[in-house]
Length: 196
Image (cartoon, rainbow, N blue to C red; front, side, top):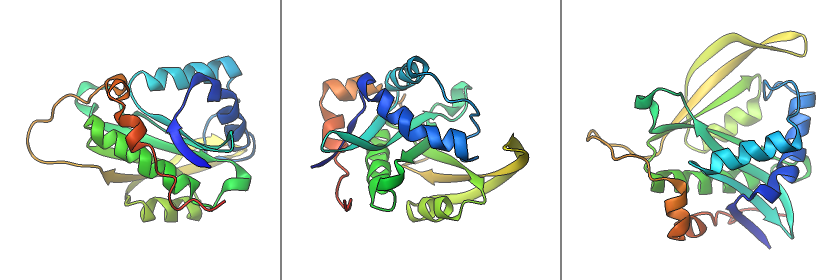
């Protein structure tokens, strides 16, 4: 059975294992050293204090994960987040990333977030196509912004409106409030369309 659910600290080693080749073999992430297991667990736990970190699991194995992080630190940015999604190599192109993003966006909307942004190191046509299919629009490029594996890399920024109006927004709802109301479980069920 495929399930998309809120991550737990015990998922950190599996998520770290999925993340490792992106750090080691690509410029998809600008992180150059794989965080220790303890540091990765702390990262996951800190994210869950405010925003969702979801995993896609099949028969007890984590196939991928997605999470939201702050877009910027200034107070007026609090309704915007950045999204990230990572999928194990043998589970790519099976709908895992799509299911994770659908569920992530549903939780973020319920929390009251307005906009989500994603940075894509280019060239990366699969990620561009994926984000476009998920409703993102390209908003700009940071040229030569990161140096990894002996060369400079551009990062394209893509954005998607989750919800919005011109009225003053309420504060985003803390994730733990949704968890206590069991609303995250109802929202994080985007396993439809995943073909394993």
